[in-house]
Length: 232
Image 1 (cartoon, one colour):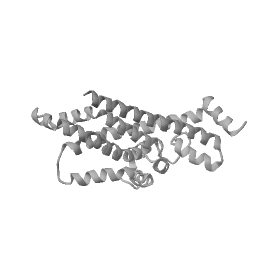
Image 2 (tube, one colour):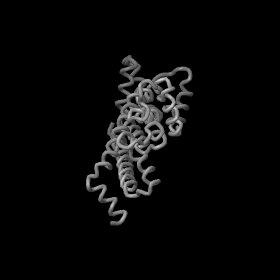
Image 3 (tube, helix red, strand yellow):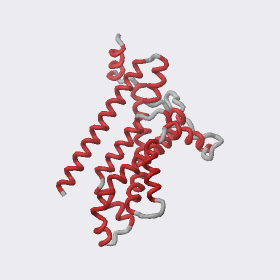
Image 4 (cartoon, one colour):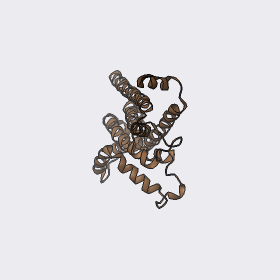
């Protein structure tokens, strides 16, 4: 059996190890995206809605942190969750929960920056209306986020793309433990170093497929958003 035949056999045979790794990867990344969205989307909209000292600096920082090195985040979370760290008593290091924390920290700046970019033009259109009806901060945030929802969805998809392909932070805080914290990217790195190219290639194909799906979804959402704006 050739290497590629073995790869397709792994993908099509329902290999338990392969699909357990894929399932854990999706669970960790989707959880991180959900948490990052709950935190980042309101903060991104708030940076547009409110004017306060230091706002410009926060915008620069949030945009700069989009390029935050994953290994630095992994080191920070490791120190935070290690036994000598402030949260060491919770015993979260080398667990899926630690990986979720690391990915959430990585994704939040992306959600904040892209949400702010999506909300800004909406706020220019809605500013006078929101002032005229004396909408409170919470109502204004909800209105802006809802009307900029296509841009926010794009931000969420971009965050998921970053999370699912991430390796540096999760290998530091997760430890790449078989059956517990081994996700697609860390498995590819490990199996390639061991010479087990079949499993590495099978997971690589899944990652590429996910990347195509995320990009296709982002394009579709952007087109729908443009049509919605024209229809208004």
